[in-house]
Length: 399
Image 1 (tube, rainbow, N blue to C red):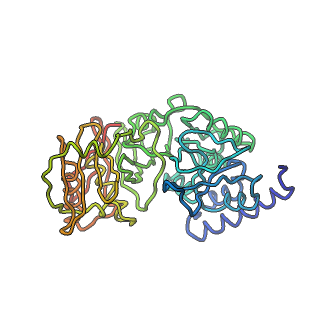
Image 2 (image 1 turned 90 degrees about the vertical axis):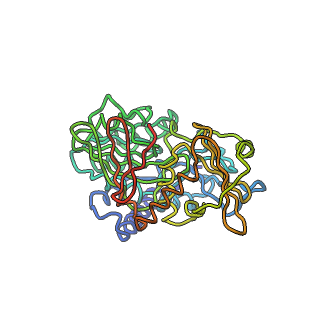
Image 3 (image 1 turned 45 degrees about the vertical axis):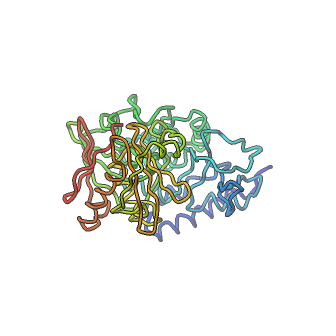
């Protein structure tokens, strides 16, 4: 299909509207970032993407529809210039956008992050003219282009672990006149050839702060990244790096999630029934219910991250009404089963998984339900700890 002759004018009009809406929402307080959003043609970075339908298939899986200009020009362009995350890849498999197929389920592994979050990440990192920046997770290249528009391409380095993703992004960036330093690299190790950086911003999440990022940040520089884990709890942190290459910073408010860095993704854990079969028959009534960390609320989102910090190697799944916790590192497991008198838990292995989570929830309640911004992350040689004045420090796993 030949693109409509008025594509560029349509796109410019929609960009202006999107920037206006973001500004009214308080996202584009900085005029330089607003100018970048009004200038960068997002449609050049997303020739195709998937949007979820309202239906599920016979197996309960989400049905994802491909969207391209060839399939539906109006829908493609409208979604491109909406404040929406656009999924561009599942399970590491690159789609054939010439003949895209409907997908059933799958784990998203690359996307074009919603513009408001992209701008918020750059702004939260305190990026200013003259700063050198490392972006971890090039993705489609749209966020990279915004940084280039704001700082100039010579100040921007962007790395991506997926070679095909980077090749596609590079074509879109160079085609748009942006020439940042690009490389196929694992964000866990940063990018030494271009270090040191004034700012490092990650568009993926890590279980803990990679030491290489501290070593590649200038003293006084900042690192903005999302911490996550195998319970899929998330928190953003803005760290300031010291002369001795330690770092400290507060968690940021809000609920934001990013795809995990591939080297930090959760491992397969097998059949929950096999884990449950090895647990002792004796159960106890829980002090805390699993809804505390599974409910669709901002507090549960925060509590899941705190719980995850207490049991960093645990994973959780629900089969029927039974909640399973498994730990492939220590071999520990727990099941939580609802009953007339509340929830009953059975635990086995060297780590009492639910007991540890309950201690954190108890301490959180005793401290008066403190928000994310009251927690400080300390990163130093030998460890990383999340601390709060009224709660015992929570260690993060080694990266």
